Length: 251
Image 1 (cartoon, rainbow, N blue to C red):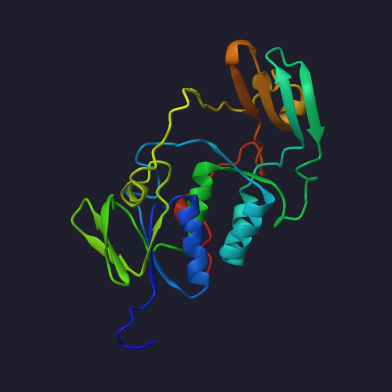
Image 2: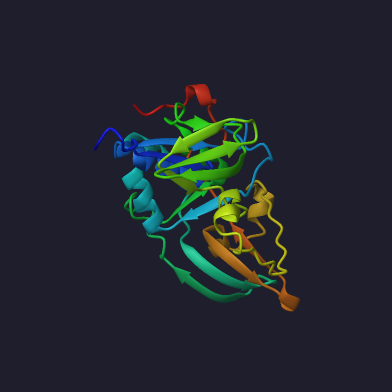
């Protein structure tokens, strides 16, 4: 590399699942990288955004390839019990179709198995070990290319320059709006409401055995429907999350 060529440095906009996984992978490959996130802290400024992430075997293998081994082990330890059934039911819980065993038995290969995790827990795991390269409170506004470099501008008046800019800022990506101004989101008219409830004796009684151990799609008249997934995590019923300061940090 000549003195005139810039040092390869990747600027990632957005500290979501994709951006953080990419940051870990680039760092493991010895590539300079920095992540810029509009939220001001490790937790979402706008509160909980979704509650569950389903990770298929391809996604699991990608995480295994990108994350440090110890951090991948922590991720596996935070996963919910894998679903054993995929169900389609009527609004009265009558079974239309059910397939079993597609997620693999408990104790299946941790690398190539289906996974279900808490969205917020996943984000906390992926942030681990990246404290020196993740910058919070950085709301992206625009970018300017300049030869072999590109500079990102943020609402607080700061900038970040690199050789590659990655848009990992979600569905409403501000980077995409500038790069592809004609690529618009289309409103499908479908409205969904998400929520969660604790698995108590009362709520368990509302579920069939296959619903309790699987992922269920409810098909109701007039276009209504629901998705129900009972997530059970390892640990005792009295277990409580440890504070961030007490969680292990990979070397």
